[in-house]
Image (cartoon, rainbow, N blue to C red):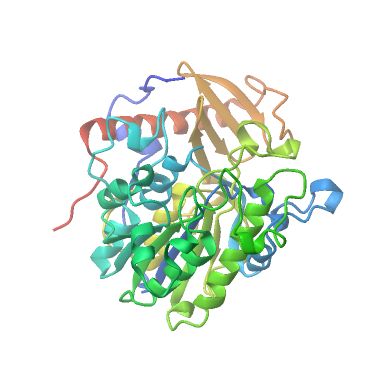
Length: 416
């Protein structure tokens, strides 16, 4: 359902006092020339990750991701983590450019040709080389157009993989979408080793997708366990990530790299009630792994979303120029100020223990999603007015700022 832009704030000063996507560097910066590698894993829902579901099935749930489970022990992640959209085409704007889905996907909106800031465009100003990898046809999903818009230097797709004599060529084509995850992630690792450092690179996997197949050589290793065929593909994706890290650990750039593992979106193939509905259906892992150990490790209090990746990493690298990003820096935001936003059928805003929904520019529902994960008790009008009004104001300010800036093509800051 389309929503009109809420206009609560009559001038820019009043709007910016509540929310602004303009990020200004801190007075004191610590420069870090860390490589950034982002793995966006198809349909990698939080439900599938055993280590993020220790209470499921009375504590007996194992999940389908043994390698990711082991990596979490040495990574930074947050108590609550959410996708900003529900479709693959929403993921790249959110992850790479801190642009959320609003009433429609950014890439299908009238604003899709706007000038934007992105993680790639900004780190290039710090001397980084940049690349994006996706094992499907090079025109698939329009990724190449967005990646070019985001200022990424090079695009590697199925064409580049097949042309590389080091790998299996078309023998590694899955017959449907593109190159199987395991060989394409090995190709990714090899190409990273040829990029000048520092670099920022991202890959979007594809094997954990309908028709839910795995390579023939693994058909007796990753099997259909009867709940859903996707689960064997998640096991294969997790194994492919494990193989990537085995290769990456041998490379000279490994220890100086921050790896981020997330999903494009959650999955409709849900088997636990807590993941049904419009909260569980947006839960994805967002994992920051730093081999050097400089980042915090373990579960952190607060809320993270896909579009927090760009400002968090730019600030951590010590980027010294202002830029536009609609998310927040999770390393420098107090827990009580952490929030997330997504929009499927209606705008949905998370802060603290609560999730708020809006219809026709009015609050329609508020739930304590931590105590009431199935969203049965609507707390609208039953909770402290200051909390309710604060959440409503911030959600409206985010939408208003986004729409007004997009309409004026003011979603980038140019530097000389």
